Length: 128
Image (cartoon, rainbow, N blue to C red):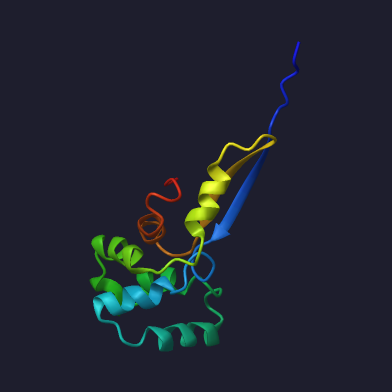
């Protein structure tokens, strides 16, 4: 009788902006809706120590009047415009592949709106 070997399970978590993508989604979204001073807004937030680095877009979407023009379709379009780093597709394929001794679950963590990451990674990483 052959003994079946149980696969080890691993969780692989990755940040989205500046890890899986080159462009900060805040810059792309700002350009899309005509907000020219995104970088200055981020610097002001960093100087105030009000927001942790990486969460600036989430804060601005909630509190900055310039971002009130953002509609549901804008983060989705932003995700389509974000340029992914090399081999993101290959990484996802390898982790989803059938490996003899290991099983991987690949998840993406981001302070950016969920729609941005899901749109950018559509067809690559399953939506959570």
